[in-house]
Image (cartoon, rainbow, N blue to C red):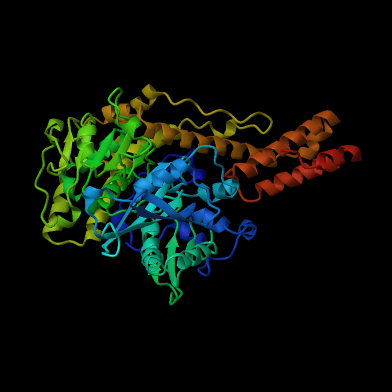
Length: 605
């Protein structure tokens, strides 16, 4: 996660600007390089090479229909496309996670999402291609490596013609992409049509999706589906945090039916409303990767709340496991509920009353009431003791013995309370809360960004004829010393034990994930600078002073560099790769013909 573009890695991190100055409908600078709207914009050369179903696979793994059989229970009835592969374990997970617990009493239509582990030994044929589309995505929107998301549209209606007395079925989209708002919007179009017309319309929808452009960050995409056109923009990691992603176009959008201003953001205010006196403490718990369980009355409220928790530390990526909806049938149930060891770093969303007993030993429990009945302001300000949580009927609140490191920010509470009293629109309340979390996270992460940037070697230490210099190691004591003069106090009004919060954060999976990512970005930057330095050298003059053996060795090393630059998409200046290729060609042509023939042969992988 970087708060600045790759080209600025060695420079000091900017402090967050006041978001009030921005036009609410402004679009980020990345918009300037987006493709023109059309059927997804002009195709890139690699997109033209995609095979049937490759485009579909860039968005979805498959679509499942899960029904209820009186003898078998939940069962996967249909998988589209038919060639999609799911292991038996994955099918079982999808079956149980696609239906609400019986106690939820979800009559009518319900939408929610879940997340489950991918079976081992499965490789995507689109691996390299998807890496390039993933490269520019923000950390929180990168494709999942070891998990799938399931986006569910569940319908339960009375039907006297059925033995059970109810029609119960779920349409489920299985994807690696965390585009929760987008896929829920897609299901609102697809599911009602499917329940009315059955399989033929599902096949038509899959064919529509297989004609979509790939989900490339920074582009405005127009996506036709079942006679409706959705218009979206996939955010990039270069977007300014907090700017609107609203898609605007000078052209008339007569064919566009739905414009989605965001593809992934949930309504934070609605989700945190039942416990909003504790939002700052919840931010700390998520930041530190603490074990959290959300107990809610339905899968919709459970999954929304878990997703809100995960996103409250954005633009930091939450690096531990999280399950928006978790059941007793889950394959990780025993692993996550055992009392023989401390609860793992995971956020679980549950609805079954059984969990109130099973997870009694967990250190932090959030009890969410019915969000639809959130007319009055929550009055419960005190954190409750865990021993008071006996059943799922307990009052909404946060049950924990945790003592926050930072003093409570009364300003944000007053601001949100005032908004409720003045009937401020929900979207405005959500924007206030999202900006609050963003500024809090930025205040926390900027000192870390500044220190890590100082670990970068100086550019003058890069020699084209030596290996790129190494990054200096992250030393906790050295970082802590920087906080006295350049800590979060520069950008945050909050007082408290910031040092203690950092010390705990440095032990967390979130720090580990963030630092690994930053180290990889900075190492690639060093490789790119080394490559650029090589391109500025007069190679012809150099090879004249060396033997043929040394020249061949140089060509092989340069070819390796070129291969690495293309494979890792190194952040080099435009034209650098072409320049290096020309240098290599010129050096080869200066060699005897027999050696030229050998060196012109493509290297075997």
